[in-house]
Image 1 (cartoon, rainbow, N blue to C red):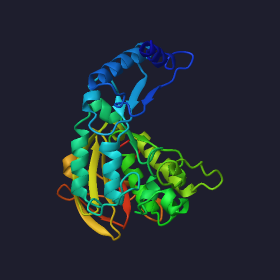
Image 2: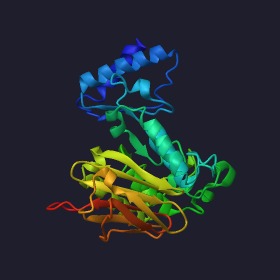
Image 3: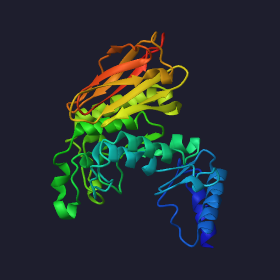
Image 4: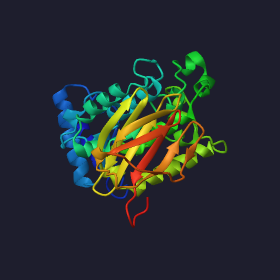
Length: 334
């Protein structure tokens, strides 16, 4: 019976000697037949996988509300289009994730960004949210770096070179800053870290540019990934929106020890903003240190010290920039 055969396959690859870490399920809600059958199939699939390897993860590609699939008896989590890729892409580029549409009404709209994130994140169980695949690009959509040129089209209509024209690496750096500090599991599509461009499938599957990598982008990714890995608060801490204005967003990631302020200026001009740091437990007695600043020109790891006044932090940010600031904890690296 085909049904039982598939369950055998589910068990096989997560068991010795293969010991795969889990399953990624393509458009997993689209089995057909009926919703009732689909849900029963994935319950049985989960049972087969977890009996063979309780630590194996099951994450699904899914478009739309995933709540009914994430109740603990089917998928573990999803590829995070709705609560990460799409809202962030609209805010930073105004582009649809295939580069098929540009909406100026969504570009730089901090209010729409926070509303979209809040709503879609609410559809996840906490465990699913913290393990969701937070991608900027993948094999189905245009490369994020290409989206920064705000050019609508595909290879067939514009040619492949158009995907590389007018790109903005500063916007990409801001996006990666959010990727490495937002709730979820940051997932890099090969080549994004090396400056690969491309319109939607199949142009997005260009080979890795061996010998022609953008080494500045690679070095930046190494630095920002090290920050993500060094602090538990950036992996399991709470998140709180701290406010925004046109083209500007700020939020906190924090636990009882480490408290981070992340800010993004997506405007083409310098801005000065005031952030309510008291909301994440930072007091005027705390010393704050900048861990990284990104701009259109590159990134900077030199430490800059800040202090709050009356629970507020004033930041002046260059055009197209992002930064991470955290409290200094005694006897612990910053």
